Length: 125
Image 1: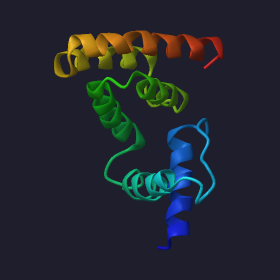
Image 2 (image 1 turned 60 degrees about the vertical axis):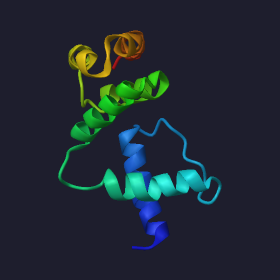
Image 3 (image 1 turned 45 degrees about the vertical axis):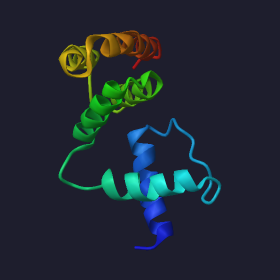
Image 4 (image 1 turned 90 degrees about the vertical axis):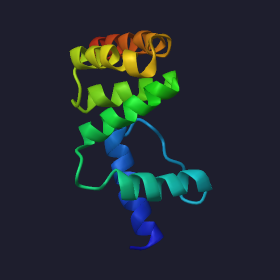
């Protein structure tokens, strides 16, 4: 598969994962993004053994453990919009994460989750 084909496949998966909400720079504009699209989204996220929801949960667990609030909120928003997780499941995930990622780190994610849930409710989704 050519780099351009991997990029196109990666871009399609990127748009699916993030509901088309995150902009992608044009090819060649950012080498980091080109590699991410081709490898992470074109090769890893497209593998058939795990569903998109499964991959999202794994990703969210790692992001939570790292304490990346903004990135976690992006994942929450996309999981809700894609219908992968419900508000109840997202809240339960935080309870499950706390003993593993740490209560202080997870507590910081609670407000992010609630904010995104409220935004989605106001938007009618």
